[in-house]
Structure formats: structure tokens, C-alpha cells
Image 1 (cartoon, rainbow, N blue to C red):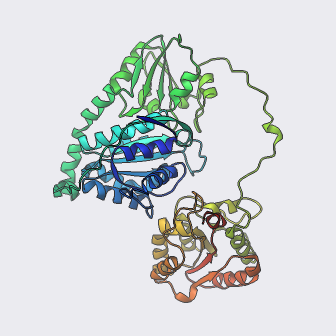
Image 2 (spheres, rainbow, N blue to C red; image 1 turned 60 degrees about the horizontal axis):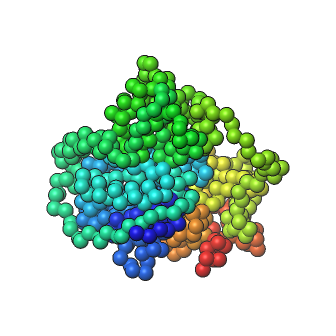
Image 3 (tube, rainbow, N blue to C red; image 1 turned 120 degrees about the horizontal axis):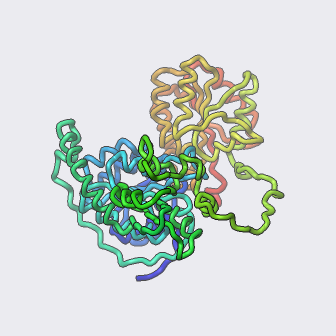
Amino acid sequence: MSKEILLGDEAIGLGAIHAGISGVYGYPGTPSTEIFEFIERRTKKKGDVHAFWSTNEKVAYEEALGMSWAGKRVLVCMKHVGLNVAADAFMNSALTGTNGGLVLAVADDPGMHSSQNEQDSRYFAQFALIPCFEPRNQQESYDMMLEAFEMSEELAIPVMVRLITRIAHSRSAVTTQSAHPQNPLNPTKEIKRWTLLPSNARVQYAHLTDKQPELLKRAENSIHNELELRGKRGVISCGLSENYLRENLDEDHDLSILSIRQYPMPAEKIRTLVEHVDELLILEDGYPLVENTVRGLFGLIGTEVKGRMTGDLPRTGELNPDLVREALGLPKLETAHSHTGDIALRPPALCKGCPHTDSFKALNEALNTFEDPQVFSDIGCYTLAALPPLEAIHSCVAMGASIGMAAGAAHAGYSPAVAAIGDSTFSHGGITPMLSAVQQEVNLNVLILDNDTVAMTGTQRSMSTGRALDDIVHGTGIDPEHVRIIVPLPKNHDENVKIMREELAHEGPSVIIARRTCIEAIKGH
């Protein structure tokens, strides 16, 4: 055994390596990115683990499923909204099951530090009828990976490990174990199990439901679901929230506590706690999954349930020790005087010299002859163009949504319908709506901001940049005369505005590729 100081993401990655994975798949997204990068960095020299960023999360999950089919252990990692993209393959993998162990590491973002929403991936695990681990610290992040791979192979089922931003991006000492060897190549011969024709899928779904009593039994007996009965006031803490609870308690406290870190929810332990207490506070970082389940539709007779749904904790955002302390009815702690109120707010901004700044300056000027023009944008650094001084974009919903939304607005008769999307986001989710728009000859204008990298998450490799991007765009069948390439630099401003205005005047689909390498990527080289 040895010790390492690791981020939660790194502990997940090292746990996967020591579990004997042969591959890791994912798409960069905060707060999950460091999982993949750690594995890539740690295994690069030996070269025995496949680590190459996927085009999007759906592709990543399908690639991981293929490696599992071949008998190898594999990790697939993404952020919570990325699981939406992978949902089709993910849900069906619960029916096919696994051959080699397949673990899905999902990093949720309560408080939306870098996300469009704070959805709770535990619901996806419950929806798919698969087990889910929720570590409370970095050590458990490591340990649970080893346990998850064993469970995945033993029960032939995918297993989720759900972590949140505060675990993913904080460090702690982790005691590690010796590494397991990788599985030999052993492709499955169970064709019917992996071919989800309705006749086969019905059988597989029955097998999946048959596994549920065993999953529940394991959760009831798990060391990760600990019940301590003391007084008549009870607390259920999930994952990290137990740390916030313990920070506010002395050793001689009188609370009865159930810590839940493995799902499905341990029903018998919950029932034992509920029958023992008169009042029950439920702490969970994310949606009120446990709270709503315990309360049920009509509440509990004889037990008062408190949590996010009652206002005893905020309905949205992260928990913290102070919020938990207040919910426990404990007096506030005195803290040192803060001077943060004297500091001016500094909203995030594009980097000095960012090519996106020049692209949007040109677009703003090109659109200034239209009354109240709107630009549909996408997910990336360029989303910051919504803020002053540019104020150039007016929507940002989901990866690839800019082109689809612009097309829908054009269908409704809105003009000019302009979409702004990055090169990596275009390959992730923009190609298919672009194909649809070209086939329908929709009157829309697409600005592809090609900065040669996935800049927002740390300059990872882009799947569609340079010549590859050009070929993809032309491959949609668009008129080549209306695919224009510009270089966003101040000296080219007037020419870029002229080109944009020409394409805005075109009745039909057009693409302008604004091409200049991200300055942070240049620094990295």
C-alpha cells in the first residue's frame, strides 16, 4: 500500500487503473474532465490502456460497451448533462448487461458552477435499475471504483459512481492498493443478450428486474450504508453531506443517523430509522430523491420529514456545513469579518486576444442593419459573448442546440436566423441539425468558431478542426459557394464584416468558419 494526494477525479481514475481497466472513454466536461486526463497521463508511458477522447458522450458510452462486450474492463466518464447525450446507449446497456466490467463515472454539478442545470444522476441510475455508489470523500472514490468493477462483472450489469464538484475538485490523501491485471480478450458469444430485438429485449428486461432483489440486498448489507440509532431526532445523509453533518456534531450527540452511499436505497434501514425517530432531516447534494421517496405522496404518519422540499434546506444549490447547521437548529458559528463586500464583482470574460472577440465584433457590426437581431449560441468559451462588452449572443441551451434552434426560428419565419457554434461542439452535436437544415434549404447562417481545440475544458483535442471541419461541412451537401472561411483578427475586421453581410443576404443555408487558434492552446504547445 502507498499514499497519494489526489483530487476526487484523480482518485476515480487511479481506482479504475488499479481495477485493471483496458480503456477509458469520455468527452471533456467540468467537473469530470480530470478523470480521463489523469488516466491518460498515468498510463501513457506503458501504453496498455486505450485513452482517446470521444466525439461525444453517446459515442464514448458505445465504445465502452464494445470493450465490455470483448471481455475487458472499461471506464466511461462524463458530466451529468453528458449523460443525457449518452442516455440511449446507457439505458439499453442495463438490458444487455456487461461482459467485462463497465463502470460509468458521472460528475454532477450542484450549484451549477459550470453547467446549464444541476440535475441529479442518481435518478438515471434508479431509472435504469442499476447500482450506484456515491462517495463521501476521495478515499471512497478510489475504493468504490474497485468494488464497482467487481460488482459489474459478478452481476453482469453496468455500475454508476456518482460524484459531485466538491469531491471532484478537492484533494485528500488516498491509500492505494496493488493493481489488478487486465482481463484477457474474451468476446461474449451470447448473441441474443446483446441483440435487443423486441423478443430478446423482453427476456433481458425480465432478467434485469430479477436482479433487483439482489441489488437491494447488497445495499442493505453494504458497509457504505451505516445506521446508528440514538435519540428521537434522525438524519439521513447522502454522500458528501455526511461530512457537513459530522462537522457540526460532537461525539456525544443524540442524533440517529443513516448514511447512504450505495443505491438502491436501503429500504429496511430507512424503515428502522423512521420507526425509531419522531423527526427526520434528509441531507442530499442534488435533487430531493431520498426525501421524496421517504415522504411518499401523503407523508409519514408520526414522523416529521424535513429537507429541501420543506424549506429547512434550500431547494437549489449546494449544501455546506452552515446550511446543515441551521437545519439542525444549532446556533450560528462566529466567523471572522469578511471584506468580500468591498471587492468589485468580476464576471468571467474571454481571454485577452481571444479569436472569439474579433469574430463577435464582426458579427455585431454585420447585424447592425437589422432591428433587434438575435444569435443562437452553443456551449463553449464563446458563450461568454453573452456578457458585456460584446452582448452578442442570446441563447445557450445544450450541445448542438444553436443550429437546431436557429432552424426552428427560420421555419417560423424569423430572419436572420444566426447560429454560433464551436468546432468541437459542432462535431459533438452540430452535424446532425446541420444536415437537416441543408436538406430543407433552411434560411439560416451558421458561424463555426474554429479555434483548433476544446478550449473551455483545458485545450483537449478537437475532432473537427481545420481541413477535417471543412470536409464535414461540405459533406452535408451545402452549396460550396456559401461556405466561407475568415481569419478573426482586428486587421481583417472590415473584410470579415463584408463577408458576413453577404452571407446574411443569402436565401438559404450558409456557413462561415472563423479560424484562428486559441491563444491558450498556443501557450500549451
